[in-house]
Image (cartoon, rainbow, N blue to C red):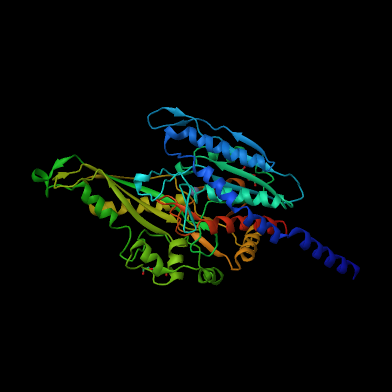
Length: 485
Ligand SMILES: *[C@@H]1O[C@H](CO)[C@@H](O)[C@H](O)[C@H]1NC(C)=O
Ligand SMILES: *[C@@H]1O[C@H](CO)[C@@H](O)[C@H](O)[C@H]1NC(C)=O
Ligand SMILES: [Zn+2]
C-alpha cells in the first residue's frame, strides 16, 4: 500500500513539474512577432538549390540556421560533403549539412528532427502577388518562398525548443538540416550511412518536419507510396509517311499499342501479379480513413475538377495512398510542336510510373512489367525492337501509429488543438523517410505543420500565422509528451 501511495505521489509530482504547458504556450504567444521576424530573416535568403549560381546563398542560409541552433546551446557540426558534378562537367560545392546536438542526458530519449533550408525557385514574374523573398503578412497568412516548405517548419521546431528551455527541455534533441532537398538530397544518403553508428546510434526517434495537413485539422503522416519509373523504347529508322506510311510497322504505333495495354478505363492496372503483394485492408486501418477531414467538393472546386473516380472520401483516400496506381507521363522523340509535320519518328520512348504500396518490391514490379511488355510486344508481331528500362525504384514506407512517438504526437495534437489527429498516408513518395528507415532502423514520423493550401512549390507560397504559432506549440507539447510515453 505504501508503494501504491508513493507511486501515486510520484505520478502527481511528475505531472505537476513536467507539464507547465500553459506557461510555455503563453511564452510562445508572447513571442510570436519575434518568431515571425526570424522567419522573415530566413525567407530573405534566396536559398534556391536548383540554381548553381545561388549556391553561396544556400550556404549562407545554412550558416544562419547554425547561428540559431548555437543560441539554443547546441553543439553544431557543419559537415562538408563531396562536390556536386553539374551536367556540363563543372564541379561546385554542396552546402554543408548541419548535425546538431542539444543537451545530453543518456537517461532521456533522443529525438532527431530533420528539415531542409533550401527552396524551390521563385520570381515575382512567375505570378506572385508579393515579392517572394520578402515575407509579407496578409489576412493571417505569411507569404514568402520557403515560409511553409521548409523554413517555417524548421524554425517552429527551434522556437519550441527555445520556449521549453525557459523551463526544461524534457528530452534530448538532435537536428539534421540539409540544403539540397529540392534537388534530391544530394549527398545525404551517404552521410546518413556514414553516421549511422555515431550520430544516429543514440537516436530513438526521427521526426521529419517537412509535411502538410490534409485540411485545417492537424495530421501526422505515417506512410508514403514508393515509385518505379519505366521507359519503353521502340525503335525503327526515321522515314517519311508519304513514301512509307502504311507499308511498315511504325515505332510509334508499337509504343501506343504497348502503352494502351497498361491500365483499363477504370484505372485498374492490367499487369499480371501487380496487386498480389498489396497488403490486405484491415478493419482497423479502414477506421482511420473515416476520421480524416477531407472535403471532396472543396478539392474539386479548388482544382477545377468535375469528378473523381472514387466518390467517397474514404475510397478516394484509400485509392490514393494504399493501392498502386499507374500514370503515363510522356513520349520522348515524338513530334510535339504545333503544326502538321508528317514525319514517322524512328525511335520513341514512352515514360510511365507505378506508385508502390506495402508490400510491393520494386525489383518484383520491374520484372512483372518487363515480362508483360515483352509478351505483349511479341503478340504484336512487329519487326521493330523494344527495350524496357527502369530507374532505381523507391520503396513505399509505412510506420506503426502505435509507436511511442506517434502516441506522443497524437496526445500533443489533442492538447494544442482539442482534436484527434488525422492519420495520413501520403500518395506521393518521400524518399528520405524510406531511406532513414532502411538505414537507421529507427521509428520515423512525419510531423509537419504546413496547411493544405500552402502552395509549397507554387506561386504565393505561405504559412498561416495560426499554423506557424500553434505549430510551435505543437512541437513543444510533442517534446513534453515524448518524455512521458
Ligand atoms: C476507386 O474507383 C475505381 C474506379 O471506379 C475502382 O476500381 C476502385 O476500386 C476504387 N477504389 C476504392 C478504394 O474503392
Ligand atoms: C544502423 O544502426 C542500427 C542500430 O542503431 C542498426 O540496427 C542498423 O542495422 C544499422 N544500419 C546499417 C546499414 O548498418
Ligand atoms: Zn520540403
